[in-house]
Length: 266
Image (cartoon, rainbow, N blue to C red):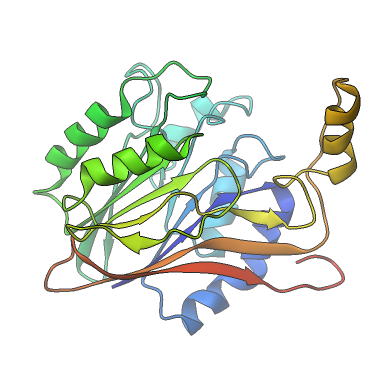
């Protein structure tokens, strides 16, 4: 099985890029299953039912979220109707939404979940290690593959959870920083790992936002809005190949950095 995982989808540029290019990429690369972090897909902060459905229609099978999960008004009343979306699993139990997904693809069952890191992150959440451990124990008899996302700020926290789950899950990948790392590899017990997948959004930007506005905040310290940038848009993530005989042990992990520059940016 080949799985495509995409970094944070940023605003309208990211959504429109996927609508225009994702299905062709999936076909050309023989992808069986696609996961994307959608927490920045609505205006660059948060997600709505409409943008989630747009990503699904573009070719995304499973959508994960992060610390911006509730940024968009009323999404807490929409998430339960979206059976292809999961919120961070270590949010308080009172939060609506699913804390994991089980997706059936070509006869295989794939378990997907995400946890929020706690280092330099805003939301007060349960321990990501304990939550991941609990979910892996819960899922391992129900699914063939398990994919864990760690949505976190620090490299050390992401790497630590990668080693913590090595041999128990098929892939641990990081998101949140919008900057891809070049450390994709297979760990000692067979789990594929990458610290951060980057983003699906405008390249000529600061983390997907307009350059001048972001630079200005550092120059004068004054508060200002940083709108989502336009222009040259691309898709970042990873391709994961798994063995049918041993689906918890990865065959390979390959970084994805795909762009299709046009006059519209999509």
